[in-house]
Length: 160
Image 1 (cartoon, rainbow, N blue to C red):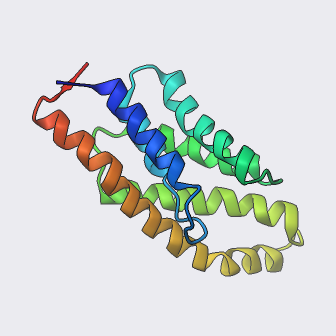
Image 2 (tube, helix red, strand yellow):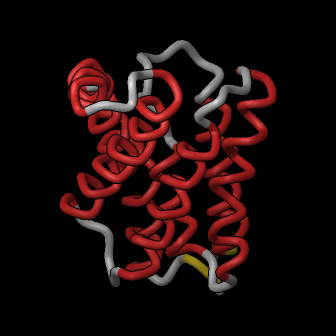
């Protein structure tokens, strides 16, 4: 038997460490961490604390920026999404990518572009390549983090 909390914390630490490896922009494990936390822990405070502390820990080393409130809010929303569904699937992963794209780029538009419809369209248009990276990163990391969790849980190898 594997302790569920230890397994989830280990996977999350691994994912946080991957943020320090060279990677394309927005190809990160944080959405997968938020979704896994929502299934791996019963305490709602921990569900939100895990992705936010993962971000904060790595952001302290990688750099802080003005859009942090929007980025962090997007992962709180992704954790809420995870709490609201019974099981993760492709649609949930794609929805989490979309949440991040919409919320984080709203912050980019609000803080760095003209507050006009033209600025809004320009911001989101220029962000589309990053959205592709977000989707690919979320798909890869969700497969690497969430699938093993469900596989072990299905085989009753996780102890609660």
